[in-house]
Image (cartoon, rainbow, N blue to C red; front, side):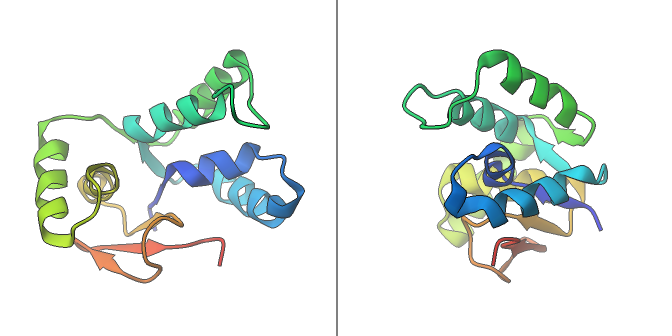
Length: 136
């Protein structure tokens, strides 16, 4: 199975909030396997959120870019016209935000069976891709 990792999986893997300890461990476990996928969008969102000055557990630029470098071992979908076109169709059909639609579009284009996310309804199948909340 080729899973697609949403940004929240990456963010939980670096989180230091004790209340999210189980989510952190689960995220780290998911990211240990090399058979995953993500997109340029996910890496960009991770960087912006992880280094945000207002984040209580913000990480420095060097650590964020080091993690991104490590995560390049996954299959990475570029943002391109086919992703844009598919995202716009998903948005129209399902009413998701454009950004969530682009996540699903990237996953579908890469041939992923599921998206690990807590942002969309667990178990919902969108454009042939299952939404799985790994933190339930």
